[in-house]
Length: 127
Image (cartoon, rainbow, N blue to C red; front, side, top):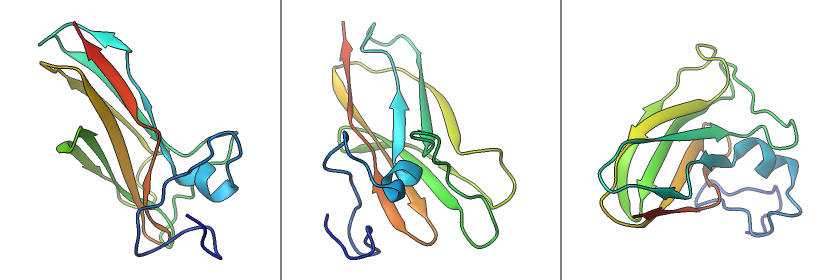
């Protein structure tokens, strides 16, 4: 992604270099926190936080907010959480899920001003 303003409203925004993030990515990329290994069919916790990388938080105002966060297992949408402006304290989603096979989790977030952002994938191994 190399757009003049650092984001696209038409395409998926996804950082290419996680060692050198622009502030735009630091406040928009959803970060997945999940165990590396889990037991088949046993519930485990997945936490998704939008932004906050290096302390760069996303605004939560009537004019600029994160509208929703989605979690995918592979290509399958497994959850979507919506937010209202000024009605939440940060953008954090905590889910309890169970899986039958090893898969890659992906999270996407939609900013009303800066489009859809995808964070780093997280592979979860099912034993």
